[in-house]
Image (cartoon, rainbow, N blue to C red; front, top):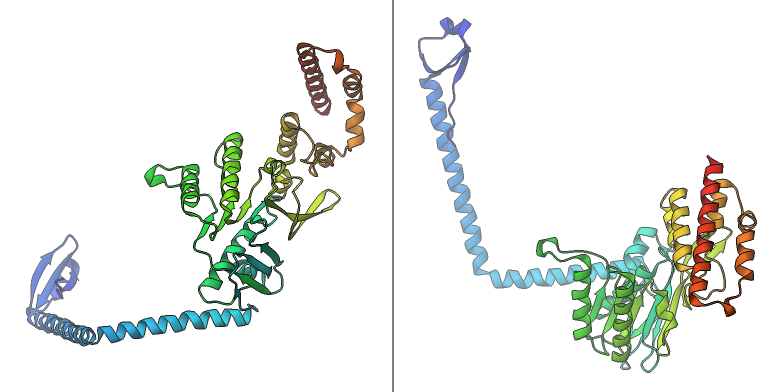
Length: 405
């Protein structure tokens, strides 16, 4: 960088410039001048800058040379300080958030009493997080199939169990009232959804690559968490893959937490599988996520209810519910109760109607279906009857739509 000191004089005042100054540059509206005195100042400043840089370089090189002579000692010191920093941090967190010392056992098992997610707990505040247990015995069911509504806490439960195992094996206290576990040879986590655009790999491709690595390398001493495997493709393909992965891990006898929305998996052979779900309390038309892991199967994913909480407009929710009932039926898995977020409730939200009004409007169609004798009908006749009923319902719906207008 070259620094030049000059005086910028407007052309209206050029005649006032002393004769000791001489012109350096001419501009449109000004003239630039310098002098012997300015040139001398410029020289002194540049020389001082050079000497300063030279001295700084000398000091830096001296420090580097001295540090090089004791580099091995400095590295040992840095390593010791880093270990002290980590251990002090773990001890501080354990004290503040009431962590407890885990116990290691020889049998291949995991028992966690009132475990918590360390990160989520910190965000919620001490005492707000709902603790949950996990028990995987050496000779018992070691594969947990976890179903439950959206937002109920399945992913949090999977992650907290994995984090407790990880923290215990690095020598830390753990966020649990009690933890008794064996050493794991590998900890596998197939969670989240991400793609690799640079390599042209879709979300599903990345998911399958990670799953393939788990299936190839996991052992009975491994701990595996899989969160909604197969969701990146069609329902049929995803469910088939999820079932195959589940079957392999059960046979492998790896300690596994397997969260899914494919509730149909719970209807298959689950003799060697522990069925868990996240408890939900129903209060009128609303549901409350209590975040508690219990034995059992989820009746519904309550996806439409979550969409409602997210602010999806009621007409769109109504259309989604109508499509769901038409193509997938209106009952939950065990067919014991209607889906919480039913068409009738959506009608009530939008039109102040209830399920009784809905039934009366379609009573003639319901009577016709009830009186139809399937035992004396051929498949073709039954199909034609079904088509006729669908047309009647569509006409009825269009008529109601016109009446509202």
